[in-house]
Amino acid sequence: MIYWQIFLAFFIPGILGYGGGPASIPLVENEVVKRYDWMTVQEFSEVLALGNALPGPIATKMAGYIGYEQGGILGAFIGVFGAVAPSLIVMIFLLGLLYKYKDSPKVKRMTLYVRPVIAILLGIMAWQFFAEAQVQIGWLQLILIAVSSFLLIESMKVHPAFVIVISLVYGAVFLG
Image 1 (cartoon, rainbow, N blue to C red):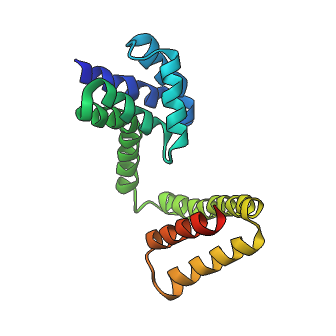
Image 2 (cartoon, one colour):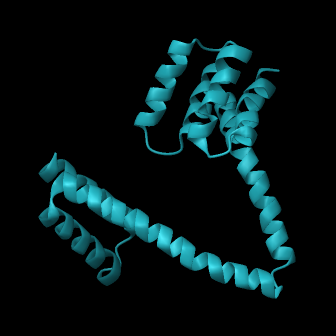
């Protein structure tokens, strides 16, 4: 029964929490603190703080931690699955629709219109990263890291994961 409760504790906020992880946090708190009484408000706030300190989506980190606390490794798996299941179900449904109508001229036009929007959003995000990096480390370091990363990836064909690790080491040694 505990595994079903863990699943529901994260599935329901995933369905109702329009806007992603931050929007579902109060719903998760309601399930975890008030409905199932697994934690106090203080404990939940500590889990939330820990989750915010780590990289990645907050809802899945909280689901994994709380699921583990309540049901061990299987509980962590079920909690994370419950948190991602609503998005997974919607994506499967939408992909099924797109596949069914993939030859439709309207669907082809729609995908053509979505590509520039995604490119613009990625460009805005990159610009914001560059602006924040410039404030934190200065133009000289920013240009050095950006040009080096570009050359490593494009000219020397180094895998991006290695470039990220190299950048992290550089930041720890020279900027830390």
